[in-house]
Image 1 (cartoon, rainbow, N blue to C red):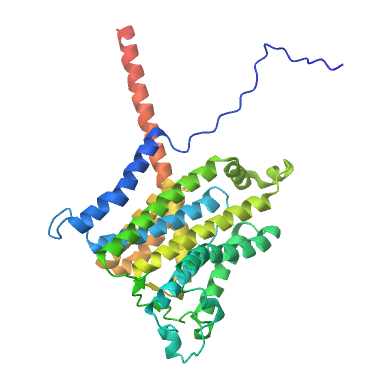
Image 2: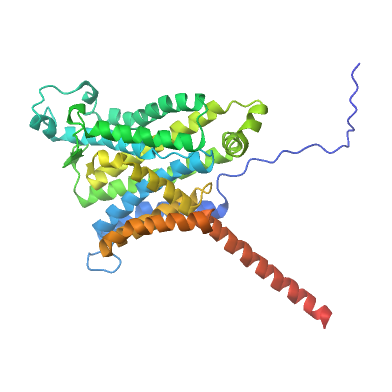
Length: 387
């Protein structure tokens, strides 16, 4: 007969409870951000007079909307690079694929049987891959499905082959460059060098009105906040802890009985789909999509924003995307020839002196401030005893 040797009074091992998605202060900040996107920005743009200092101009609405699309991309990059240790230099491809899917839908909103560039090229029949482009519901599905499918096929072969590190980064860069060359060709049916532009309507409504511009802005902000919550949930779950174990010690994880392939492939596909959504939101706000969005420089910039903000922090990369693109918008007007040198110097400076990015710098300053305050409190407590 089995007799338990464990004493009834022996302490039991208590596993740590699941942390809340956000702290009380975090939820307060989230609600304030939601109110700013959904209420404050529309009020300042649509209701405040243009001559007022509080007016939010149409230019700023477009600029902030574009930056929020980039912020979704850096969240996707942080999930795979910061938390999984997989550096991709090809995420611009997934961003552009989502943009092209949305651009195809917008090009069909003119009411003609064929897009203008096909008429110019004397095409007679709509290609098969354009057949669902007149349906908004199908477009929404394809915005997720096309980048996700491409990422799944590529990731399946790459991760099964145990391609890692710099080799994986080079292959993703090569994939993006090959896709860019393919989309540059007129016979592929994607507008060639010019891509898609001159969009007029979306869901039957004019695209160039202030109300539609603000609606796209609000939708982009809500998607950014929603993806932030999704990312927080993923990294705080068991799935996220396995991803961090893959980043830190993949051989040890395999020795513990975990197969890294499903985890790496899953986060890779999720990250690609997030970039596809960002591209789909980007196109109607900017008004153009062409193969230039697939350039390797764009993918490298996404990695730079993530590194500047601080990997494995979520909020840090978002801040990095906002700061770097804000500086880019200012420098390209004031001194356009300086921008690329500034970007290169910034990346070198962060690599050498701020390996944890701006988020790491903030943490260091906060730690020093707390230590200083603690030292002062201890000095005050000891002062009467010394007297």
